[in-house]
Length: 526
Image (cartoon, rainbow, N blue to C red; front, side, top):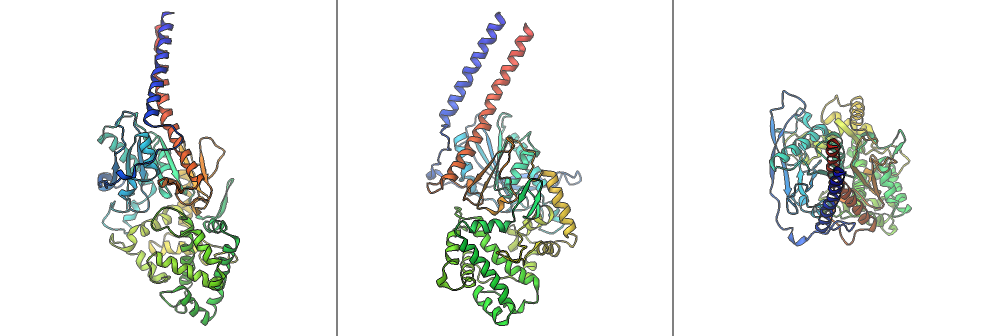
């Protein structure tokens, strides 16, 4: 009886301790159902660049002692310095990272609420994280998602040691687009280091092109989503685009029509000089369509290069006073070229190849274009194809066009058979749309074409998803604003609640583990 009384007393004390700790936690971080807003006036200091000694090859003992400098940023402004304060890591992707991103965005708002220490890690071979002297095909063999995930794991282990972080401090990883996939896969592959992940706009299904049936999932083609997103403005907008691309096909068949296209689309090289080169013509159609797709992908996103919207594009396309649809498409193309600071529409395939074959870190394509294209050829596919001549964007850039680029830029061995094999291997390794993940929240926007190869719904409780209507690529990752649509605000609140569940649940589990251990000790005492 005495042991039972003592045991009961300890149980009561544990509950009191837990209630007090949780109350204190909620006082420090109000559980209002939404993250607190940052004081923007305090965001004046630029974080310093930090450098981490990373392994070149995590999977080959011959190269394991070759190291290079990987860049990262850190923000400890809101760090509680408690033994259980969480650690947030945003994983970099196919672009250089920015010090700006470690001071703003939804994840920083979450960090303020939870008192988290924040890191932003640059992906190998992008930005200033340059493992090799150039971007040669031989050196790019060290560029892969598998190596990048091992980089993340090594970074976490090293930061735990460098900053004497407690084993109770949980790492949460964030990422958007390709880094969103990395975030989910990092939690899956290194769950002993990473407690949870927020995976935004992540394409987790590698594929030749975005249109096929796999198991119970039907994956739309990228440009099918573009078409559906344009239709949110009006059916007339989609029809106008379709008629414009169809007229281009007609004009290409006539000399006077080709001269007309030069004028309408401000081509750098006369179309008549390229009519016999089907690769040039394919690239002409692809560039026109890609410029439109870029508007869709970043519709209403708060970033400098994305301030042109679906409504603005479609308003031009349905404006009959401008002229027929092909004239309207020419106007839209001109506006987008001006936004991109391009003097003319450069569609020459050989010129593109010449640029893409430049292996120097000082080259134009070292901004991530050469590296990311290599990853699509070597791991993912993700080709934004258009395959149906009677559809909106025609059939001028099928998957063969992209495979040809892989072979011409990198190696003749990167043919269709090779691509089929590496895509299958990527899906085998990470599970495609059936990932073996826990503690990962998948977030997508309905406007974003990249939701096609992403996980947007599931009947499995261990695979939670958020699908945000009428929002675009990585919209949930940007800082909250009063102008945000209610569904975006609601989505961020759900993400916040999910993080709260991950982090507070851990505290409860620790207390219950202590309770179980105490009960076992008293059982042994009799």
